[in-house]
Amino acid sequence: MKDRAAVILVGLLLLAIAPAPPARAQDGGGGEVSASFQVVALPGDCSGDGVINALDITCVERVILELDPETPGADANGDGEVNAQDITKIEIIILGG
Ligand SMILES: [Ca+2]
Ligand SMILES: [Ca+2]
Image (cartoon, rainbow, N blue to C red):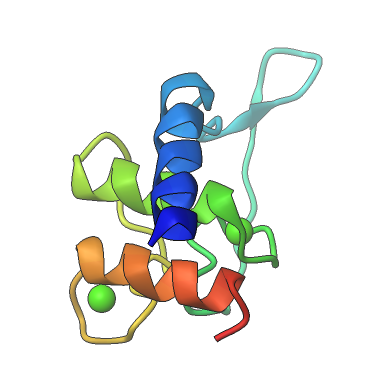
């Protein structure tokens, strides 16, 4: 239980300091650059960086609070909703479960 509290605390701290990722990149000439690709999400990898860690807890918290849009990996337990149960699932994954 102490570990879980620590993970949640880290997540909340990261939530406070983590900037939202930029939606689009711009080239040096001022024009917008766009690309099309298919996202294959790892359940729990809310941030989409290919690893599951405390940043994904922060990401799910931001999705739940509607600060950021839902990402393909945010639904960690695959029940079709993004909520606190997904945070718990990510914590279990991080702890090796
Ligand atoms: Ca991630
Ligand atoms: Ca879920």
